[in-house]
Length: 95
Picture 1: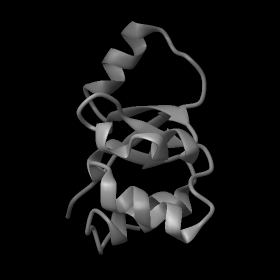
Picture 2 (picture 1 turned 60 degrees about the vertical axis):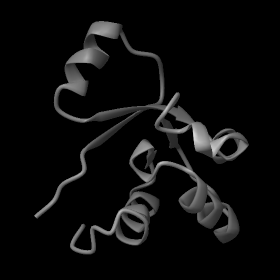
Picture 3 (picture 1 turned 90 degrees about the vertical axis):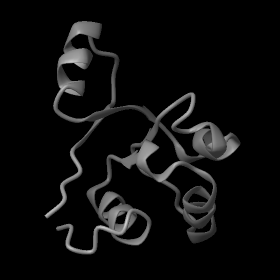
Picture 4 (picture 1 turned 120 degrees about the horizontal axis):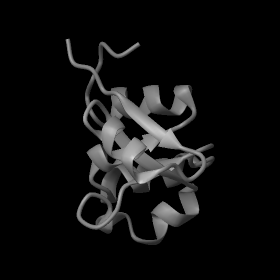
């Protein structure tokens, strides 16, 4: 079984706290889909991205899946995160 543990930061946190969490999980700053779609090729290389609400249009989700480093995207919305892990990351057994 594979697990993906992601922490989406809705507010700034102390650097030492973030570093401690990174030892156990991926940490993503909060952002929105418009920010990610401005330069999805940079995700992973220069930035990680997360969303509090995620892309609302199916074509925006598909574009993000096509252009971004899939491991550098996370969603605060559990339904969107589950959809991402199933459809994009290939974790078909994620629940």
